[in-house]
Amino acid sequence: MQFTNTTFKSTFAHFRKSLKAYDLELNLNSAQDLWGEIVLRKKFSAASASLNRHGSLQAVTISSQIVQKH
Image (cartoon, rainbow, N blue to C red):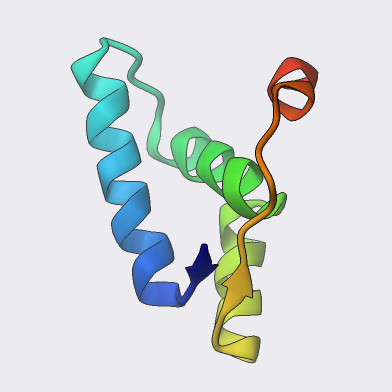
């Protein structure tokens, strides 16, 4: 998936709602950083800055090995 700043933030909003639906609430900064690490392997603020600079970024491939590291 190709992320723009808009799609990155909108998918984060869906991610946060999903966390809450499963009673897995995190504070805002932790949830943002987790989402950034999952999809772009960057903290949320660094991902947003990169998206502003480049316009879009390709999401990383998510595998069970990545999930096991975190």
